[in-house]
Image (cartoon, rainbow, N blue to C red):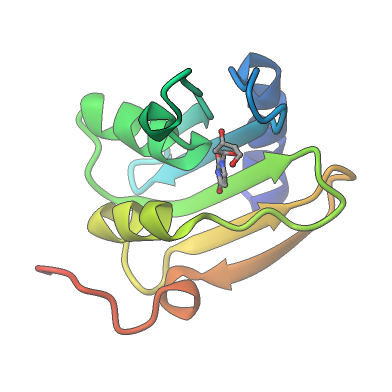
Length: 128
Ligand code: THU
């Protein structure tokens, strides 16, 4: 699974985004060590704090399926800018990833930039 293919899954997920409040659609896809992929979308709520980001939806789907190790995550929105995971999502990704986990940040044109999780969340608080 290369970066472009994982990002394509994230891009495709956007059609399922539930984002009537922000109108900001986000799709994400995680790749686990066993080679499985899990897609996720942002799911908003009238009580805004109950909203969940696309990245965490994808991570929680993977964990719910018995996966524990995330090697890459791709993120896509409708923005011209690359979409980076928010701080909470970086921490959640770190729980099931490590400093080498690839974070593939896409824009609406399918272009992307790649960082490691260690770059995006240095000196992370982690039990492992
Ligand atoms: N959002 C994500 O799904 N992922 C991010 O990395 C940033 C923000 C969502 C949350 C909310 O539904 C909308 O984007 C606007 O913040």
